[in-house]
Image 1 (cartoon, rainbow, N blue to C red):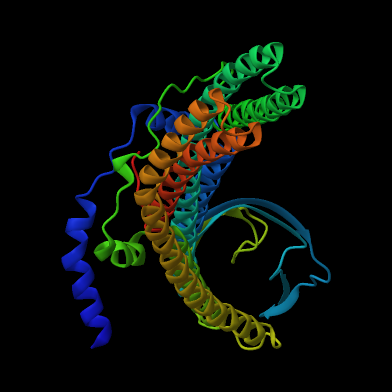
Image 2: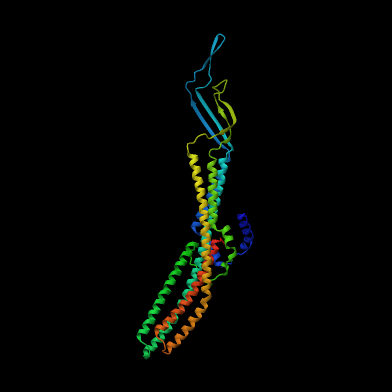
Length: 433
């Protein structure tokens, strides 16, 4: 009863869930399409799907007739004739010729073979698993491309903040240089500000290096020989917004890891069915035609012949091999069911953690504007007071650092919030391609 209620709830919720398409920037969609077309791992997994399709066809061929042509010569010994008395005469009657010739065609048509039908179902299940594995990899790849895309956007905005900070420090350096010349400041103040500039400049260089690495990774995934340029400056994209009341229902149906776990259970179940049918009989139709000698009354003459019949194959004894195979299949089935339960509780944990990350970063983001406003005001006051000689260089540096940290923190909260939303969409199997 509990399972029925869960299914009804999912059916009622899913139409609303699937109607919520992700609004993703066109550039991310284009990059995702390129990665699907050019990334070698995708092509490899597509070949594995094709291989599974061939295996299905191969197992279906078990129901097709098998025809063989054969040519044989056999020399028999002994082939002594039988002596038959006919009145006063004794006649030697040859029953089997010493030289036997046979040229013909044989045909075997399976009529009933439950093992073959089980193998077909098993291969179809494996093909479904291959398709789901391909779709799972595409899902992971698409979200990796999107994450790299927004990672570059985040680093570009961080770079812009650092550039502003460098410009501000340069202005302060010029002011301090003027004060040093006038005797209103110490050389120590100038050196401290120059050290600050060098540190920010080094961080600026590190950011540029990280951006270049992200571009290299993106080019690798998308198979691009030419450089990609991302000019987007929006970190928070509404396309990844979520509705918490439908997350778990959608994950039950669309999460790729859950799908693969269910595929493994079905494959193990069909494997158990296949091994259980090893001891079942099979029925075949036999037919053949050709030319051979050895037929009465003249065994030496080669004659046209044919035959039609049926063959029933009944397994009687095969040591313990079928029993062990069945035990292996049963253990594999139980292990696959346990793996599904593990995947379900792991999925619930990951979704709950992602929801907590969304909540945390939303709260931090809500207070970041106030923090930036306060840091901006503090920096403005510190700059004015430093011009008037009221505060030290260290206090000015502190105000500048706080302002920079406030800007970078907001960017980090925006980026972390986006990553948390993307993780929830990935866990629920949301697609935009």
